[in-house]
Image (cartoon, rainbow, N blue to C red; front, top):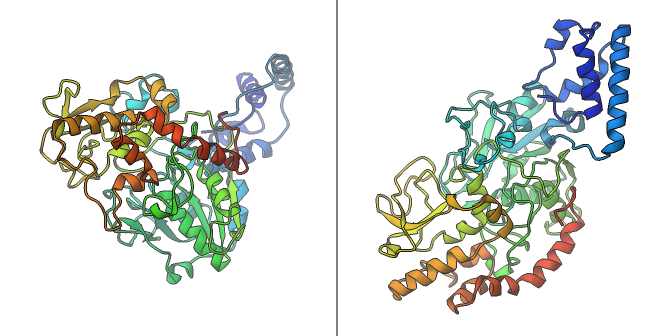
Length: 493
């Protein structure tokens, strides 16, 4: 697919083609321009095409140009098509020449998010279409993976580094991932995730490559672990003097910033940096902040970092993903609800793991016989949720698929789901430990997710969601000011 070309060029080419006089290129030449995989060379082919055209072509082009010029006078802001960082081969392939390359990626690293179904154009209800399916329930096909694209371009890919859930994205949350070999390419797949945490990059792994390329889809939340692995890789590369290249992707939750800032006491495998729960940054922007704020052990700006930005993207863009970024985020509604419903993890309330709609529903046996919780589901063992909470037991709760999508997007982190469930369980049985078990340091899992125990304590005190959000407003404002220094794209406010 050709993406990101100017409207003027598009109209001119369309007029020339319509006149049947794209003569010098010929039909055979045009058919060699790939609309599926080789997006990096499409513009080279157009620019390098012979320039001799017939008089009819020149006339058609002049007329089209005049028409476009008149239109541009009325509309100076022509929208640019979204182009992902990994599509911009001309920007980063020269940086890889003669280098041994490590690729940090997983199943989400499809070049340009190309697939046979256009999720962005599908309209209302797209958020409930499961990734990998079209609007008729059929399987979609995907474009080229970045690993294959690099190899096709004769890049020396020494290894692939994979995060939580593995290179294929099928492992359960927290499950260890073993090293393996990619059967298609023969490239070693080296896991950077062991049981429940990212693991340090070994010296043996660092010796395998000269440059690290990052192409992975994140969802913009502090407790989503891919950025932690990226941070650890940047840290190791900075100490070893190895370059890092981020092929940037949109943040599907990049249109808001919300939540308290992580306190040092709550640094864990689901929280590494002093940022809010929803940071509103792409991985490229966050990498610039990591480097610029001196969070790496080697100090401020110690990482040789290059970010290849997206084109046609800003922080108001609602870009639909094409693949599940992790096994239990199965559609876009789950991605949008995840900042709020993930807060139920390790409480007595299930988020629907082991069902077809995790993070879009929540429920518990403790909420049975309560009229306001009239929805029910039964978790079962499945790929990505081998032993789900309350397996084979009926849970009663809420179905959030019925909510307005605009309301979900406008609310940011919605604490009322958690507050209402806490109060309901407590009313039914005050002896139940809603938050689950304390860890050895005395904290609950909710404290690690929020980066502080203040949210839990305020809920226990009976405070409202508005009061709780007001408590983190000042620190959030300070973070937003710092964040602006590292933005690559126009902000949402």
